[in-house]
Length: 144
Image (cartoon, rainbow, N blue to C red):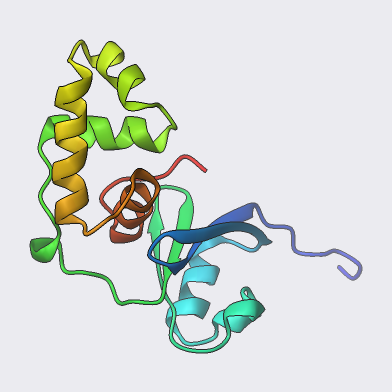
């Protein structure tokens, strides 16, 4: 039939420009098509502002995560304990260390210790950079 347009769900793309700088865009295309385009060297179709240099994309939940560096093999990813993962996810939700301590029934000093350890392993200088690097590495899925 003529006159009918193909309609897709909006796909959210989380773009990491630098280790601690990111942006979110939505495109009217299925996630698999966006992944194929970006990983096939045709990312400018969806991200014209990032047309210089290689881009790498992967699907995390329903979000396409785009970085300038290739994916890290799973065996090379920093290992997080169950508690560190909990703290990281709560940081990603925007909770403060005091709020996380209260929620988990721990002391704020204990939470600061978990955060310091994760920052050292991910070579992050602050909490925002810690969360951004963890998402870029695929250590947890963002709720965008």
